[in-house]
Image 1 (cartoon, rainbow, N blue to C red):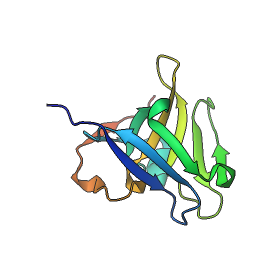
Image 2 (cartoon, helix red, strand yellow):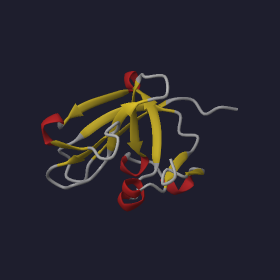
Image 3 (cartoon, one colour):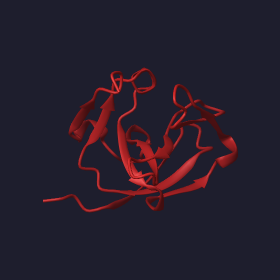
Length: 120
């Protein structure tokens, strides 16, 4: 049985960046690539229409590296990386949500899928 989509709010530590996302949190992805492992991301992926940036566009700094396909965003004030965006395999815009930055979500209770991004 699939988990229904639920609306969540989230953002950075200082509150400058806030967003709403609709997702079915059936699990999270722990990637071992250089940036995800150092930042401690636990990822959920959603299509662009499921994500709304409520405030803080002007507070975000964009960091890209390697192939520059993913926009690794972080708050310029507190440095927290609460979400990023890129394109999925089908070319559509999608968002990666750091589930640890969602309000009232116990990320430790979600099943973790390990992804070998270091080899990708």
